[in-house]
Image (tube, rainbow, N blue to C red):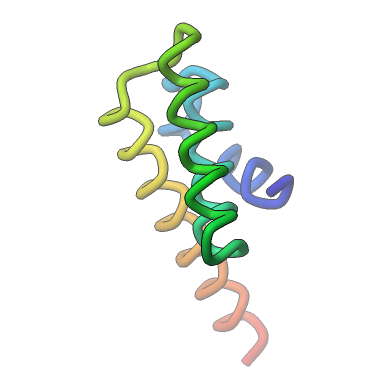
Length: 85
């Protein structure tokens, strides 16, 4: 998760987003990719409930940030692969 957060710093898009939006995007992506089954649903439910209780951005903005984090990760991995060849 720390790696994804640090990767987000490379993209100027994230400088226009609230830190909490980037953090939630990274956490949702980490939960989705590393935890499967009933525990994943529990954690996602907890995150959604947390969003309702506190002043987070709208879920659409968080979803857009999730997509951007994934895109940044893909491009970074692709760049590393090209440079290793």
